[in-house]
Image 1: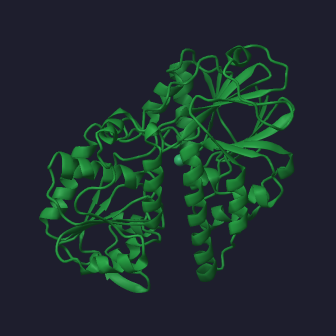
Image 2 (image 1 turned 90 degrees about the vertical axis):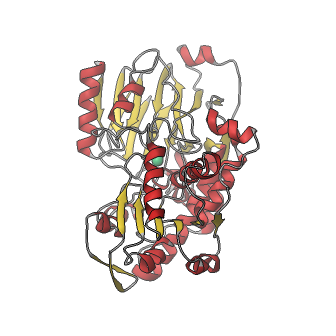
Length: 472
Ligand SMILES: [Zn+2]
């Protein structure tokens, strides 16, 4: 079995790895490079292999840095199947459509390239095969698919049939996210995808790592960091929003449309409707992508954790409660301004580098009564980062705005596990993997995690480079 890394090596985006096993080539993820214009230029470069030679793609989850270049594969001749969990398939469609909209908009404004067309996304969608966690997917030596329930012996034995057996496990990172187990040629490996944080609402905890692994390819986004305690996350949200409401103004929450927004609604529903800990004020969810994603969450309640499942079974609508208004259309969004007094506005983009939050920021940043609640990581150069860094004046849509509102940050809502969580997970299976390869992290984060893995678990951990080939 051979693994080659084509992306997310010493960086956090552009996930793309190849596995050669049983005489066939497979990919895990095919994501977009995201960040500075320099980094994003790499999306226009060739992927580095013959697209037609790929038998199948396994997708860990629907984030753009894991699915964003799938349409480039189909555009350039890939004709195999793309396997992902059922929610991931549906979320991927929303994410790719949204990415195309953003590319089209940026092309008009900045002349940056549009990488693919709507028809390429349609091709991707037609190749998806939705799978369940724990389902065994058997790919015979030649292209095709066969499913069987009696493959455990093959998973463990020295198999020379050329078959490849693949299993998706719950990664607890975003809705439908998976880590992927791949067995063939008598070897067994796992690709972690992104590993979720602990005790995230709605999502189940990351499944235990299977024992007997010859290699684990693991993300390392927060390999050198520890999150603040997540146990009081709801209390932190409650206090911040209460303070904002007591100031009597508008509470703006820039939010990532997938996962973070749904988790926030879930917590607000709990705080306002069930526990009556916060007063009812008008709440607007002003993000078409987030609103569409809610429908996917509602369609797959079998993916909920025990608490969310309990509420769902009792007939509770997890993402709807008194006072909440969903504003899908632009006209509806513009009317939010007409609601007088205190209100909460949740809108994308999460780093305020575009999306509807920008219009609200333009209107409300300069009033000291208002609050801006930052709940996610803010990249350098984004409007969100400038405000967090304390810049007094910011330019929004060609206007200079003075930041006079209260700016608050919550750090406990990360979608990724921290160093402790990653170490617990890597060392928490029936046996520890024989080798660990770290991808999806800045070098300093990956190196720090590699050191801890070697010291604490006694396993050799290697930080991968683009182009690195590994034989298992
Ligand atoms: Zn992710």
